[in-house]
Amino acid sequence: MTFMGANLGKRLWQRTMISLACREGLRTRIEGSDRLTALAERFVAGPDVEAAQRKAEAFAEAGIHTSIYYLGEYVDTEARVEDNVQHIIAAIEHFSHTGLDWFISVDPTQIGYSINEDLGWANAQRIGAALADLPAGRYMMLDMEDASYVQPTITLYERLVEAQVPTAITLQTYLLRTEDDLKRLAAQGATIRLVKGAFVANRRIAHTRKRDIDDAYLRLCLLALSPPMKESGLRPIFATHDDRILNILMPVASATGWQPGDYEIEMLLGVREPLQRQLAAQHTMRVYMPFGAAWWPYSIRRVGEKPAMAGFVLRAMLSKR
Image 1 (cartoon, rainbow, N blue to C red):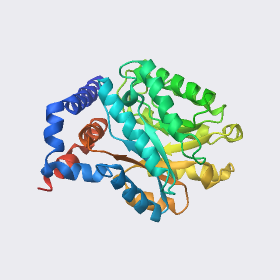
Image 2 (image 1 turned 90 degrees about the vertical axis):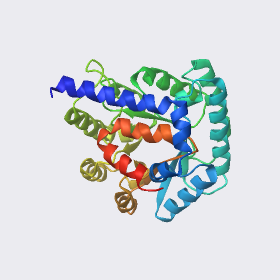
Image 3 (image 1 turned 135 degrees about the vertical axis):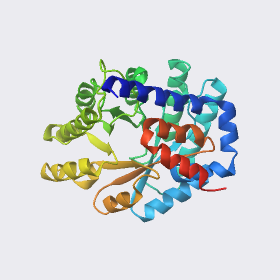
Image 4 (image 1 turned 90 degrees about the horizontal axis):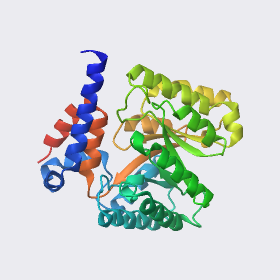
C-alpha cells in the first residue's frame, strides 16, 4: 500500500471508530452489557467519582499522581453539556477533600465548544470558580482535540489565565504550528502537556508519517528541556508511553538542571502500568484517569487512535461474560 493509501486508510479507520462512538443506540447497548465491561475495566477507573478516588488512592500508594477526567464526549445538546459540567465540578469538590495530588482534564467540546464558544467560555469560568482557593497544583488541564479546535483551545487557555484561573494546556507535536505555540506559551511560564497527537490531519498542517511524528515529538520535548525554557518557568508534562524517547529525555533533563519535580511524565490508565511504577521511583509520574458511566466513546476512541489495539480490544470485549 502506498503512503497516501495508508494515510487514507487510517483516516477512514478513525472516522469509523468516532462514528461508532457517536451512535447513541449502540453506546447504550454496549455500556449496558456485562460481557463487554472488560474493555472499560482496563481503561476506565469506574462509573463514578468514588470509584475514581479508590483508583487514585491505589496509585498514590505507588507514588503515582492522577489526572482525572470525566467521561462525556461527543455531546451535541446543551443538556448533555450541562450534565458534563455538573459532574466535573462535583469531581473537583470531591477530590478537593482527599489530600491526593491531582488535576482535572477537560475537553473544550465537552463543556460547550461543540455548540458555541460563548457557552464553552461560560462553563470554563464555572469550572474555574470551583478551582478557586484550592492548593497550588490543582488546575484545569485543557485537552487538545482535532485541528479545528487548536486555536479556540489556545484562546480559551489565554482567557482563563488572564482571568487568573489555574489552567494548563495540551499541545500536539505532530502539528506543524506547535513549535511556535510552544515557544510563545512557554515564555509565559505555562504548564504544557506535550503529546504526539492522535488525530489524522493532512500534510499541509501536520506530520503524517510515524517516523516524522516521533521525531517531532522528541525534538519539541528536547526544546522544552532547554535552559531558556527552564528559565521561563515552563513546567513540561511529557505524555508518552515510548520508553525509548523517555530514555533520551531523562538524562538530558538531569544534565540541564531539571529536578524530577520540575517536570512530569504522564501515561494513560491501563497502558504500560509496570513501566509507570518503575518511573515513579525516580520521577513525577501521573496517570490520565477517566471515570464515568459513558465509557464506550472513550474506549472506542482509543481504538480509533491506535488501530493496532483492535486485537486487544476484541479479546478484552470477549474475555468476560
